[in-house]
Image (cartoon, rainbow over all chains, first blue to last red; front, side, top):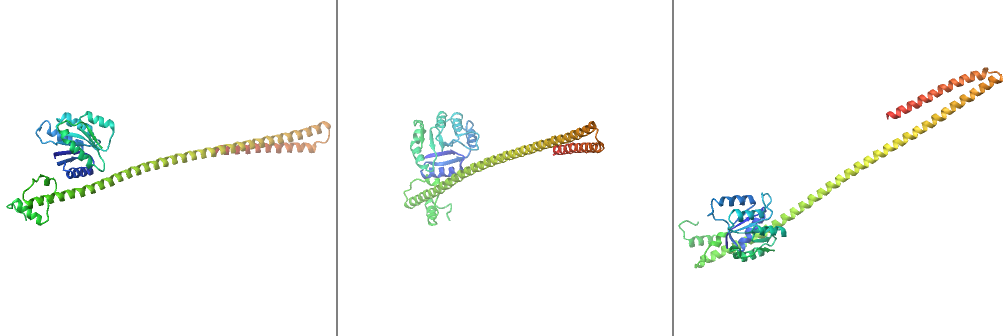
Length: 145
Length: 188
């Protein structure tokens, strides 16, 4: 089970769906849901470089378009990977399947792309089975649809 | 009540007796116990937690779906309002154009009417002047003929002077009336 998981998504209702789905599927033990990339950025900024030993999330799910935030999910992933040490499994969770955006996400280091739908559980289950590969960076980029 | 002096087993037994079960991810941290009571309590906690999650997830999904339906309906409403506004603006523009065309038509009609009136007045003036000149010439010719032929000119002379006076007066009256009508029409 993933010890600590972070979700960055502007849709609060999806937080509940995601948390319940993850809990039901025994995917994660602790889930922190944030509704803006600015808030996530502030947290990561506080941990790095001043507090590199801080227990950071093992895995981060970022929405592509985070309404009300200064930057989108792709920029968030770039920041986490390049400015904050690239220490976690990270990817996009979005209802979009725009190939251009997927390519951009791959470029900045996203490891997976989960397409949101009403039936999110099978995708999360599949992701969880691939998770060890993402952890040791052996798994290639994958789209869950 | 559970007290701090109770062992975990006693606490669990008290909770189970009161039908109180632990919820949330905390349940997942329990290790397997060899004690049958503890094991069955933990399993029941897990089962209830799972059931509650499932129920909440179904409700949340339903709310999420209704929310997205509402959002879609709001978007459709917005676009309909926009269309309505655009139609209203078009209608206003058409109304203005129609009014402008009507005004132009009224103006054209007035111009035509005025032109017709002026033409009529012109014709009347011309005819009246020709009549005045004709009567003048005829009377003068008759008077001249009487003078040349040496006949009595007393009656024709006085008639000629009277006629001439009347014709001049009428001519000025006609010209005055025409000028007055023209002035009044221009002012309108």
